[in-house]
Image (tube, rainbow, N blue to C red; front, top):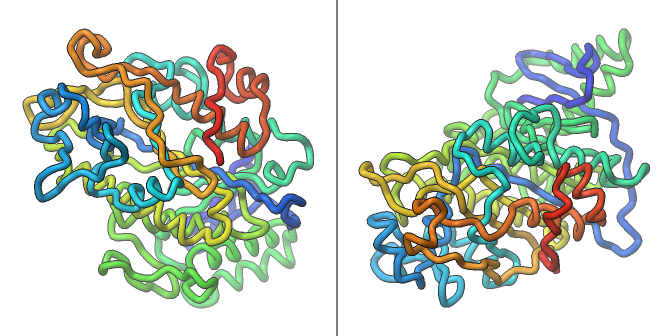
Length: 426
């Protein structure tokens, strides 16, 4: 089990190594719920590799769509029919949970969206997406961490800090604000009573590290112990299996099982009264140049994993789901026309997926640009008509009360012209 805590200047007390696993926890005090009984949470899922928004949420009502997207275009007919959202858009059939949430007004789509970045480099695109700066080259801090830092002193959300899920901390949540890092188990567990013996050692030699280790062990149990909580993690379709009280994914966080497991553990930590209120997860593998597939195939498998993550958050957060917003973002989209290997190349416009009990859902938010040659960006890509930063600003404003001035200056520097998208939260 991997646990690590991000702080500005790592030291001996920032990272604690024991039995092949890393444990650390910045002390986080307990708080009562807000007086108005609202306890907002924000979960950010970064889809690295550039999601094909036209195959995730297809504009089946656009007469030019099927011809451009060819064999991977979604259709409302056939054995793998897309799931209609409204009279124009339909979601990939691999995402029945998202479709259900959409009908329950707990999911929404922002289509034809992009950051301000207009090149097609994965590295630079991800840098811009996660750093929140207008251009690449800023890899020290992320917009989500700066949002935590921008909250008033003593604010519960800021004090409880953030959660980073995965073997490394996503850039989007790196920074000065406290962050708990957790990853599904990938290393051997400590044998016997090693953890207890190390804990005893530090209780005698270094009480601060003893507290950190105890917090880490507690987080480990909270995330993965199938004896804790009513929503215990269980094997699903044989993809995971018990291992000393923990569950190991079959594959990494870019696999369907890995995405689901990451969400399971994260939901436990986020649902706790004294757990983090914001979280970041990064799922790799969305670069689909070859044999992408549409309603079935490689992309559909990935979308099914993302759909499973939405379901695990809904289930694992329990009553906290009603105050939760989940947003899935990617660095850019893919070409509107399929290539010669039945895939798509790096593009521009794509989708932002929103889910959660706090979301004002049941809507596809789109100023649809059209797919005729003259309407495509550089005659090849879905033209962006919405800014991803506007979506993220709107969520931060509605969930945590951050002002447009703070969002435009500190959280997303030099972006005052990009106004927060309103009414995303019910």
